[in-house]
Image (cartoon, rainbow, N blue to C red; front, side, top):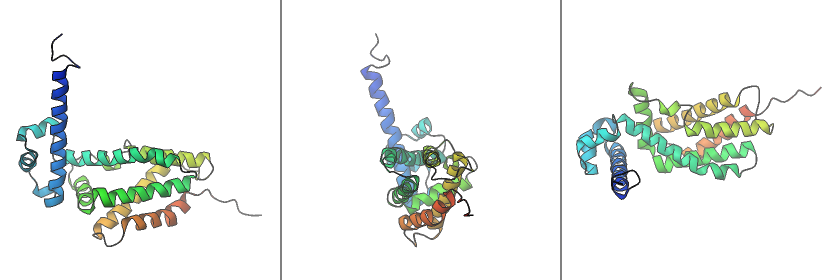
Length: 214
């Protein structure tokens, strides 16, 4: 069998190099976006910073906006990592509040204000950008959907609307928190503000309707 056959050391090395190049392009692009803003960064700057040829960019990404989509997928990887922790929490309300706290903390501390602005602005302004932010195919949507179903099964969350509809409404409402924080330039604490919003407005809206006493 040829040394370049699938599974051979030659193929594995090429795959590893390709993955490393893609990772370097992505990470340096995100770094530049944070430093200069999305519109001020060229593809040539990205590949120069990554130490690769300009043509390499197009091997892995079609446009700069694809980097933004990739960043959302990285955020979803974080949500994927916290799912086991959330599933150990008893009660849908506590589980949802715990998720909200972790989500807000991750965006505040790992994503950051500058990158959040870029993610939102690019999604809004670039007509060619994939609308991954609001896609029901995101892992985020599936995770919230799971919490809604869990709450409905326990009688803790209203059942007059489907779990899918409630998950979509939750995600839509929390995007308003992120947007307000971005507009305010971090004038208030995202974690505390997000948890207060969830506890004060979202959780009561999800509660089953009480039967009036006779």
